[in-house]
Length: 106
Image (cartoon, rainbow, N blue to C red; front, top):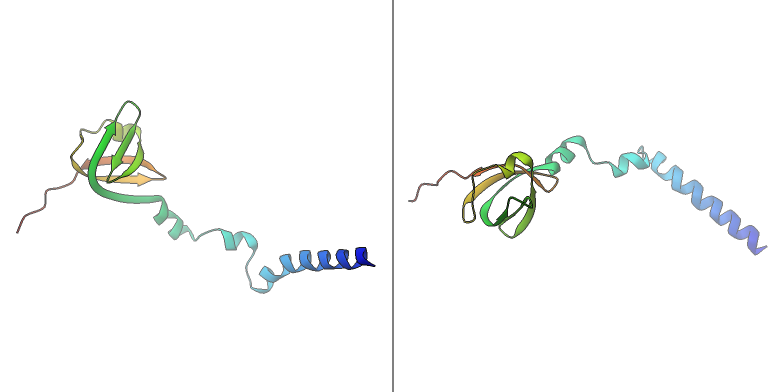
């Protein structure tokens, strides 16, 4: 009797796991996948800040306390510790980096 009750409960749990998203009009994959525009925005960002550490041999850079990996092009950029920079970062890797334009003082 207990085995039968457990097997029925398991069957109901499996059925409900696959039918609830169908009633909501979504598949489990659609629920887990972000929209393409949100995903693209999350992948590429512009980071502005001061270089605190730079190791071109190991291809590592620290900008405002965050460590990033340097891409090939970014590793060749002419920047140094103390420079205020703008960097394009995608998936934790600096794709391009340049000294930030000077701001006018008021």
